[in-house]
Amino acid sequence: MKLITAIIKPFKLDEVREALTEYGVYGITITEVKGFGRQRGHTELYRGAEYVVDFLPKIKIEVAVQEDRVEQVLQQIVAAARTGKIGDGKIFVTALEQVVRIRTGEEGEAAL
Image (cartoon, rainbow, N blue to C red; front, side, top):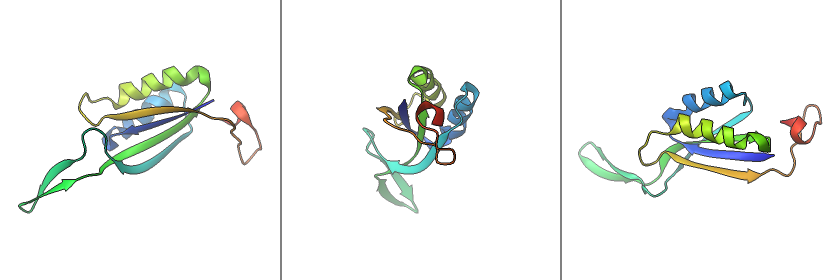
């Protein structure tokens, strides 16, 4: 089992969610986060004053999947989240040692 964590632009959330749902992924956790990568924020103008926005709003999506579905889920996220501009985000894949469904006590892939 793997945990896929994707950091994307907020306005791409609906497209990514729909792409994952169409592919059959239903368990998704979404968190509003702030951060920056290579772009290091940007400068904005407010009432004539210029100021630097260091941390940009992003959405963090977490999805637990079976190992044989990882590549397809990655492709779905990339296709839905890509704008081709700086700041599109990143995807991280990490191993899941154990998963337990609290309601039923199911463990491992059965808990996904």
